[in-house]
Image (cartoon, rainbow, N blue to C red; front, side):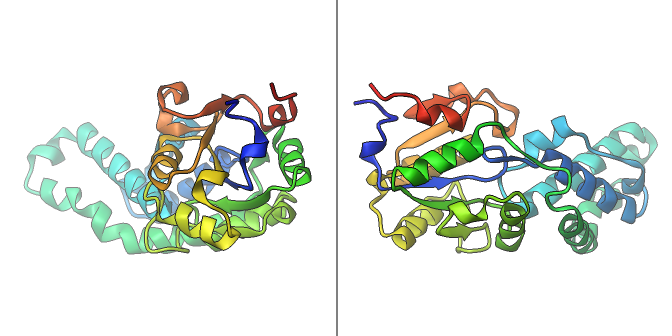
Length: 248
């Protein structure tokens, strides 16, 4: 059976970051402004797109903790005196100690830049229009906080495609746990096996497999810096526009 035969599906659940919208520059700006608000050694560091691409996808908490740990480790490695000295333990504890301040700063900066530096991936609007025209119910499911996801979709003119938008704070657990997919299927009123998951990462894949949802992975996303075709899926696609290709 053609895995892209849309007659198999009543609905589609679509990931956001790396699948519909390239948000790496939003993340970089917000994270670097956050680092600038922190004391040394964090204030002198910056993160780039390549680094952030390996860290996004598991929720804002994971992203922020990963960045703080990364900067702290880099600082300790550079400052060999500190790493051997009596203050090394204290410096190693800095990410945890600074997390509340960093979280508040990051939330403020991300809210201010959300969508400003992001762009919709080519083919996304055409693909969503086609799915909608075929009568599929659509939901956006992301590990990004719900309020940020809704604001981003609205800023990019994509919010009208979706019956529901659920973020990482909408349920007790985030992807790759299957709970968010199963809860989204329930909201859509569709069976998991009739609900296509469209994502860009192993995070999406693990959740879809566990929930029993067929999986379509885009090849242009982030996937934590790893090759996407190494992740098991029912199909891969280079652009959502290709959903409009004749089915055989």
